[in-house]
Image 1 (cartoon, rainbow, N blue to C red):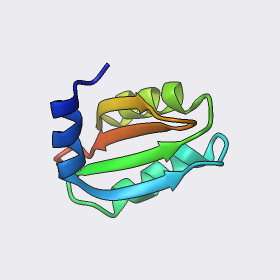
Image 2: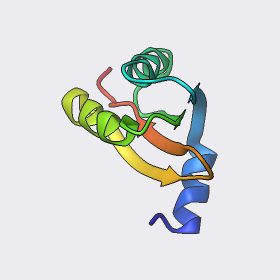
Image 3: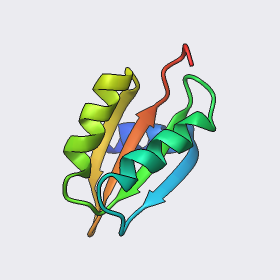
Image 4: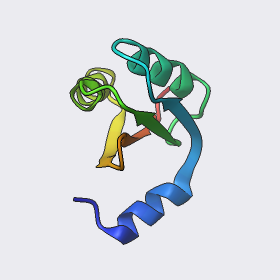
Length: 89
């Protein structure tokens, strides 16, 4: 569970939000990849998903691409993922 102060700090750093709710695999990953391409290295992207496999998929995506998955938070009916783009991109 992410503490409230950590969540508030992450929310304050978000530079872009990608709403992938209602989309199934592989679309949340593809939309995340496209959104990350549009921001600078080190910046934080917020991704909203409803696909049940998105938690695992985004975890693997972040590991494979070396982006930082800062948090994944279950909300009412969807998950919020905070992904920091790696700095060397």
